[in-house]
Length: 124
Ligand SMILES: [Zn+2]
Image 1 (tube, helix red, strand yellow):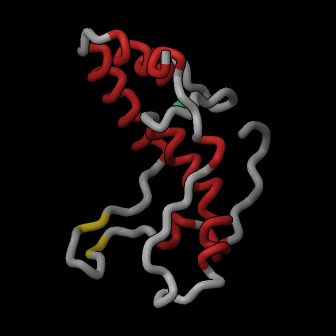
Image 2 (cartoon, helix red, strand yellow):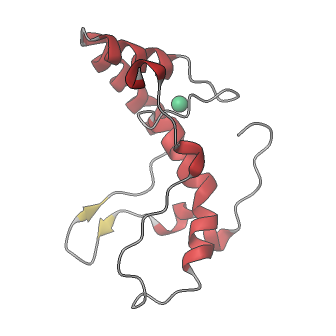
């Protein structure tokens, strides 16, 4: 996740498909968040986690505080990394799904193998 990112082909750019509106089930849907909104959400989460006294919350806050563009924390709790992950993997996911019809898809869970991790403080 470093260096110049590969341009996302327009057909596979999630930002084109996630817009303000109402989905098929009648739920309000917001557009794909901006980088600035993700930064603001991360700051809110850090503040909330810091307010907690638990060690685990402090460790997550520290990871989010140390998250940088060139050295992302990759925490699933980090909205900046979550946004980045969705943008980077969205093209491959859409390309994969393109070979199936909607009728064929009953339930799909796609997990990025890079997200399989267990922080030491959690697993020990
Ligand atoms: Zn991060």
